[in-house]
Amino acid sequence: MLNFKKPHTWVAVFVVAVIVIVAANFLTNQKTVEGKDSISDTTNTQIENAEVESTEVPVADNAIDEKTKQSILDWAQAFAKRDGDKIVEMATKDAQKTLENENLLQTGKQDGKTFHSFGWSSPWPGAVNNTSLPPYMLYSTDVKNQTADILYYAEVSDPHVTMWKETIHYAWENEKFQVTEEALKIYDSITSGKEFDIAYLGGFHDTLMDYTANGLGEAANENAGRSDGYDPEHEYNLYDAIEAAHYFLNIPNDETKVRMNVVPTQNKKRVVIRITFLTDGEQRIIEMVQSWGENGIWVPQNHLDSETDTAEILKKADGNASSDVSSTEEKTTEVPTGME
Image 1 (cartoon, rainbow, N blue to C red):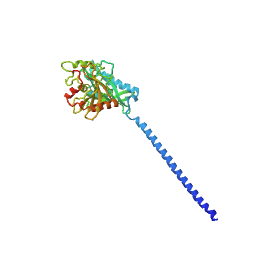
Image 2: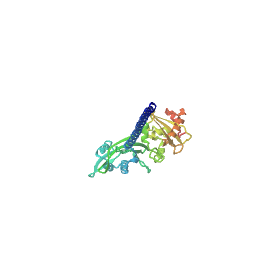
Image 3: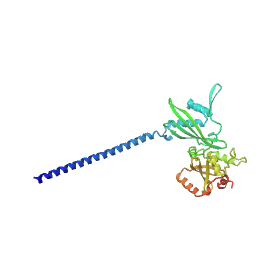
Image 4: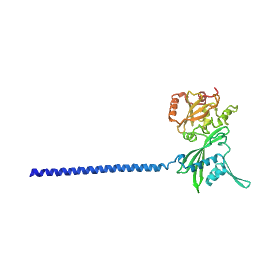
């Protein structure tokens, strides 16, 4: 009897143990599944939130609706054309007041009629532009905050081009586009990499900064040969690539703020220059060309923005310590000129 009952006891114990193990595994697996679902739900929520948030980040002009974009360009065109009546039509009273304080907008009367004049005498966008190149470009837009940045190529008859950036705030009032705020920044003394990037976002080629195509380079080359010098202050020798870079790129010739040195190349008609902005430590690479013969002036042609090309050029420059320019005498001896 004892031998018969004993197996039942062990069997019962064994069965209970199996049940406990199975139950434990089931509960553990259930938690694991719930954990995965929880992680998945969290991830999906984060993606959905990221997608929602991404629409709130300032966006490029290709995301703006065409009607608003065209209205911004209409404003830029009116600005460049000095169309005071159009500016008043598109600006709120507050924005008009700002323009008046900047001495850009003037209101008067003639023969009993109110008229609006706009702009300064010189420099001005497209003032001496004889090409089909527009004197402005849409730099950026922020749909959420309803702002836009416009770059203007302001010219003077020297000839010389200075970059301006106008920031406008806009709104649609009764289905009418209105500029509500306006601010203008003039980049006539660039001392940082950030300022350089803003001013020359569009590069030089096929813009009004391209002195080989804007009709200004020829006049500059002719003026440089005059006995009284070229620029109004007679500060720059445009037959020297570095001095020409300072002048044409609106970078002060002040070595406490900016330094330039030539990167050696085999091309005698092109000079590669490294610009170091001491205010922020940023470096930029540009090319200068001698488009009017070996006795002609140097003008900027390319803003090298390729990381690979820039890295290779800087490597060559860093390997040649003698290329560093620290004085006017060194600039003259190291930079190819058309007067040799």
